[in-house]
Length: 268
Image (cartoon, rainbow, N blue to C red):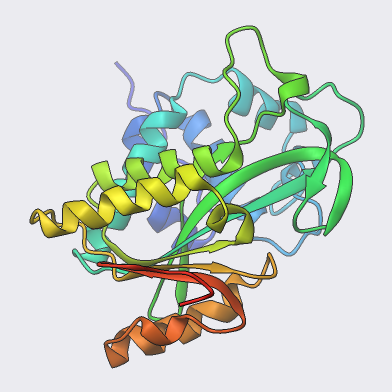
C-alpha cells in the first residue's frame, strides 16, 4: 500500500492550525481544500466567494471547492466540536464576556434556504438576505467565535422546521455553551434580547444554578441600546469586572443590567 502524499503547504500559521484537524479528513485533497478555505477567508479579498477564494495563492478550480463544501466526506459537526474543544483548552477555565449578536448577508433571489426580506443588522435596514444569531467571546481584548444558529423566517420554513425567534436561538446557544463547559461572567446583547421574557427567564435559571454550586458563575447581563453597540460596551464591562462590581453597568446608555442575585430595571 502506497503512502499518502503530504498536503501542499500554504501559510505557516494556517498549516500549523489546520494540522490539528487533519485526522477529520479522509483524504489529502479534502484536507488541502480545508486549508485553502482558511487562506481565502483570511486574505484581503473583499468578497469571500468560492470562485474568489480559489484564485488566492493557488489557481484552483472553483468547482473543486464547491465539491468540498457540498459533497466531500467530512463532517462539519466534528470540525466544530474539535474547534470548541481546542478553544476550551486554550481558555484554561478562564471566564470571558459572552456577546450575543446577529449578522446578515444580503442575497439576491430566494434560491438559498432561509433567505427573505428582513432586517439585516450590519446593514441597518431591511433587505433581502440571510440572518444568523452569533455568539462570540471577549477575553484580554481578544475576540473569538463560539457558535451560531441560522434564523429561519416563518415565510421560509421547511416542512420539518419549527419556528424559533432570535431570542430563543440565543437561549439555545447559551445552554449549549454551558453544557460544553464554557464559563462567562457577563452576557452582552442588544435590546431585542433584553426585552425577551424567554431570554431573561433562561438567564435567571442560570443565576439560580450559581447559588446551587454550579460551576457557571455569571456576574451579570447587559442589554445595550441601540443595537450594534456591543463592542463599545465590552471594554467597559472588562473594567468593571476587574473593579469587582456590576452595579455601575446600569446607566442611561443601557436598557437594563442584571446581576447574579438581582435584576435591575430602568426605574431602580
